[in-house]
Image 1 (cartoon, rainbow, N blue to C red):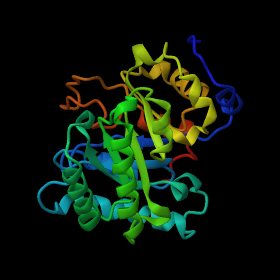
Image 2: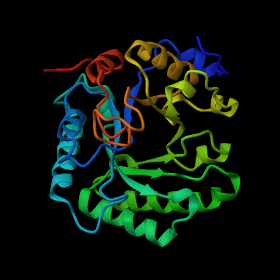
Image 3: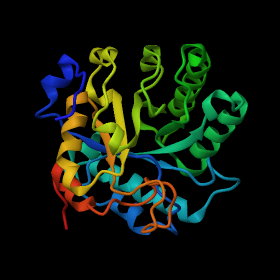
Image 4: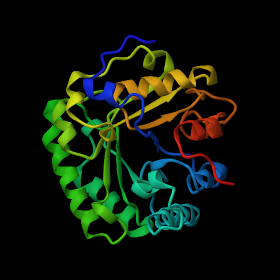
Amino acid sequence: MPHLTASANARRIAGGEQLGFGVPGYAHPLLAPAEWAELARPGTPLHWAVLNIANGPGSRPDPHCLEAAGRLRNARERALHGEAPDDTVRASGGRLLGHLDLAHGERPFDELVADARSFIDWYRIGGFYLARCPAERAELPAVRRLTGTLHALLAESDSADGGGRLVLGHGTHPYPGYAEAADQLVTFQGPWTDYRWSQVAEWTADYPPERFAHFVHGVPRTHLEEAVRVARWQGAGTIFFTDRNDRDGRSGQSDPFAALPSYWDEIVSRIGPGISE
């Protein structure tokens, strides 16, 4: 078992808390049709998935992305309105998030808001994933200003039920104040060789598991159970694990999270209610 600094809260939930998937962003639906189809499949414990057309919403609506967004939105609606009463994870999640690249605080506020409006108008997204989000204390006021504006935009939208969802893609533990700026923080993104020996920040003990997400690539099938155990022990409620790596010839993608892991069905069955045929 890895050496971890686990919170008391994490230890309490280590055996029974339901995990779900957060998908950092599959490839374009033309390149990854199976991936996008799986997100709408009944029984998939999906919390949210990120739509990223061209490092943002693109310059105009993409018909293939519109179709994929519609399928995912319809799957969520069916769960919420009782057509899939056992699909409790999707009923509480299953949102499509628009990808906003903060470039570690370098992108102008007005440019980010314009991208956010395009995502809402074109794809009726249910929240935003703020990629490359700063993690330092000095950048927190600017991030708070942005997330406050995004929450207001989502509240005005008829597609973001419950006010929408904001996820900060730090990829590491940020200054603790960021926990109050959004709904969820990605506090780990990296390889299994680092994750299995990682330590959780002590301040995370003040928050429930649904406030944290972990994305791990290069997880061998033989270590999948251990990886799930690490996530539970560290108090993460949302995960995405894959056996793919940064340069994976099998998928033709340099992004390890752009395609399904080879053990997708196994991990869905392991952490979710099971796959319905």
